[in-house]
Each structure stands twice: as C-alpha cells, then as structure tokens.
Length: 346
Ligand SMILES: Nc1ncnc2c1ncn2[C@@H]1O[C@H](COP(=O)(O)OP(=O)(O)OP(=O)(O)O)[C@@H](O)[C@H]1O
Ligand SMILES: [Mg+2]
Image 1 (cartoon, rainbow, N blue to C red):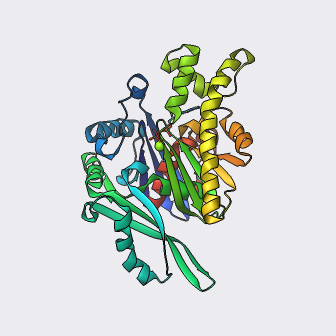
Image 2 (image 1 turned 120 degrees about the vertical axis):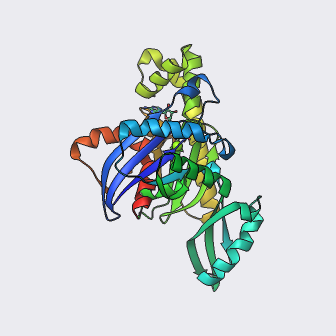
C-alpha cells in the first residue's frame, strides 16, 4: 500500500509518500512547494483562518507540486492547521468507556461556540486515573466545521485524489516525532506566520497553544535592522542565523529579543503544564522550517536549560541511505506530512 501525507501550511505545501505497512514503512518520495508571495504581500498566505482557505489556489499549488514530485498513489491523508478546529480538553468523573461516550456530547456543548450539527466531533481518552477511590478520565476533543472538511474534499476531488482521512496537524506531529515515547515532550512548530506549542504526554497530544508569530517575523526584523530587502534577509536568516561573523554581531542583538520571546512562551507553557498536571516536560522538539535556523537549537538549549532536539520524523521509517544528509535538512519541514502519511497507512 502507498499513501501521501499532505500538509497545507499558511505558506508552504509539503507531501510525503510512504509505502508498506505500519510496522514496515518505506519513504518513497517527498515534495516541498515554497511560496514566497508573503514576503512581498502579507495577505499572500494560502490560508489565514479556516474561512479563508483558498480552494483554487491550493489546488493550483498542489498541482504544481505533483508535477515535480510525481506521486505514484492517489491515496491521500490531509493534515489540517490547528486553527481550523476547536480543540479542548476536560476531565470526566468516571473511567467507564460507555459512560464516557454518553457524557462527551453533553460536555462538548459547554466548550464549543458553534451549533454541534455544523461540526464533526472527534475525541479520545488520553488518560484514566483512579486515585483514592476517585475516578477521572481526561478527554481531548476536536470539533471541525463540516464546511471546512468539504473544502478539503473539493480540493481532493479537483486533483482526483482519494481522500482516506484527515486530522489536525498536532496529532500528525505527535505520531511522527514522539510515537511510543512516554516522556512529557513539548513540540515547538515554528512555521512562517504561526508557532504552535504542543504538549505530548504518554504519547498523547494533551494540550496546545498557538502564537501569532513565526519565521516571517524574524525575516522582517533582520530586513529592518540591516536595511536589506525581505529576500536578502530571508537568505541571511537561513544561511547564517545565529552563526554569524563578529562584524555582524549587531544582528544577534536584534534577533535575541524575538527568539527570547519564543523561549519565554515555551517556558510559560512548561510552567502551566507542571502546575496543572504535576508533570515536568523533559524534552523540547523543534520543528517547522524555522527549526533549521543555524544555531537556534543550541540557543534554545541554553535558554531553556532542557534537552532540545531538531525534528526527525523518520525514526520508524526506512529510506535509502544516500538520502540521509538531504533528509536532515528537510526533516523539520516534513514532520507534519510524515505523520499524516503514517496515519494513512494505518
Ligand atoms: N534554514 C532556515 N533558517 C531559518 N528559517 C528557515 C530556514 N528554512 C526555512 N525557514 C523558515 O521556515 C518558515 C517556513 O516553515 P514551514 O514550512 O514549517 O511553515 P508553514 O507550515 O508554511 O507555515 P505555518 O506553520 O505558519 O502555517 C519560513 O518562515 C522560512 O523562512
Ligand atoms: Mg506548518
């Protein structure tokens, strides 16, 4: 069997093609389509919220991507941005599966601001606890507008893809980057316009937060401080990042406050999780294109005083050895699409 995992980000589209079975997966192919329109026009993103997902443009971009990447399958699994859904978590005072299933729809109404009939509701039990005779279950619930799912179905139809399923990107990331590892982990996905912080504990995605700031902001600040075009600043960021010559140290001074900003948000998320759940996050995984910024992982390691790893979504996947160095570079871009492709094979 083969499956395509497809990640439609705000600016870039990525696809990963896997073959085999869930316990014997092979990386067949991958593709990344970078769209740089946003550097000139801030409204050139493919989507900024779920109402604005532009079907026609997305179809056109995916078509372009497929021309180069030539997937051998039509089976596709989509990963959707977190802002496309309402995601919430809550506790229920019992552990019995039947009782949980009955209670969830009632509980859902409390948290979701839209009529339930307009939404597709998915949920899972992420923890069960029996302590001192007190039973509780922790539920993560995802409610996605049916209208949005239809948009993705239209996109698939226009490309003659067989859409076998979809999920929110955080679940794809947890699967690809954490898998069976039970260590409390924070996945930090720094994209172009958005940064998502996902807490994965015991292998389950249990919490998240979105920040309206991403790699574009870093480019912008470099462009301003050096007085160069956005394109030059983008190049500077990607090639030099924090690893710059002494005569350019001034740039580090402008980079630090913004990167510290990300760092402080990460620390805050870790604190909140500890206070609420009495669990210490032990590891941070950096993903999204910005994870490739030279020196960023090292900078965060020092700032956070924690293990900080760059994303490697191919742990459970076989690939041709000569690809290894190439994959190291594209890995943070492909984490979401890889997680989606894995689920498509399951
Ligand atoms: N080597 C690098 N150094 C620093 N930043 C980089 C590097 N390579 C890519 N980026 C940045 O990564 C970002 C793109 O990341 P990604 O493709 O994960 O975003 P996206 O998924 O399209 O956006 P979002 O997650 O916001 O929807 C851009 O801001 C780009 O400048
Ligand atoms: Mg992304």
